[in-house]
Image (cartoon, rainbow, N blue to C red; front, side, top):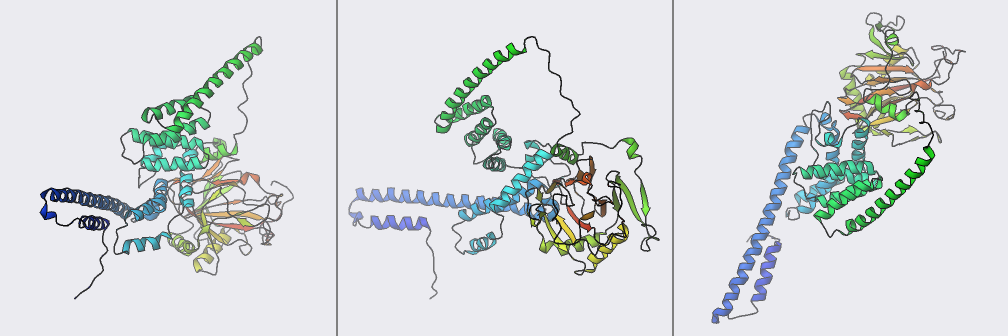
Length: 543
């Protein structure tokens, strides 16, 4: 005889329990009246059984529908994973799925008797994104929204410039984004995304969320921004849907009181102001010659706006074949070089790194990519920062011939010593990846910035672009209005220090957030030591 272990489902346990309770009353056959009770009991059991079957079928249908949707999604994504995740909405939704939705599915699939799926999911979950990842992806979307002046509907529909793998955001996605902004006390973005969730609900999109929940967040976010009148309007909309909503009922009275108080104060201040202004001339307009704040200029340049070079200055920029004063490596095959900007002088080298070299550098860097760090001016040590969102790795010349070849190429074309330069840094920017305005060199108030290296200050920067970027991702110089756009296979070069050794403050630059695409760069920071005869010092401070 073959024996086996069978786990009884809950409906069967319920059935046995009912039958056992009925068996306490024996001799049913002796009374038709009692036997009729059995019919009703059986009818109830059949109804319970049917309910259980329907619930299981609905559950399986939900799971099947979700699995089919994800199967088609992953099939499309795996054709070009980096391009797919280059769309910030896709990246955010991936974080949300793995951090939240797969956990919900695990709770749903409790009847997995083989334990195969649950066991596999439990093992894999240790590698899933965390709440921090989901929040980070959400903040990146908000950052892109601000920098590139995108409305919530444009992001929600996935209609971003250069986006190949368009993806729509659901009501739940919009609500989640608004809720994360709310937890960060960011009521401006809370309003934008709760309003978008409300719009999509109004358009008839199906969701487990209801308008009452969304309106609750929306009215409070608007109130926190000081617009009591609109907060009151949305509170009334909420109460029209749920007249017994306790918090909204209290808010209604409070908002009405505050609004009346505000109106009285405005009326009173208006009277006082009217008296004071009698007989006075109109105030003069403020001058528009004031410089824009750095943040605003930075974001304008990222959008391709901002300061433009005058035609006269533009006419002085040239492109040329370059061999760095007859360097033997490039006499017969000079490289293509073009001027990007005049002050500071920024040049771009074209076709300077091959696709094969790029792939090898990426292959070496990928296993050791870690959150990018910055120099802490107080301690002189490396630390992570919210204003630098990327991962980086460092490659030494002895690890692979291609790294040594690249280092030698930089030395040949710049004429600068590479022995005292930092290792080749490879960086990959994530969703909304950026590096806000900063200097590469150490300022006078940071005397110990590179003390541990013992090679002096960073005299120059060489930056390879190892991928094209569909939208965003420019390198911008806010102080002078320059914007350099990524182009795969090229590199840009500039000096951070004047020949006198003084820092060139016009080289303050930033990496704009990547709107759509996947940005890979590698850079070489070249230091002062060893350059004494290659770039002689000057007595002119800003020559």
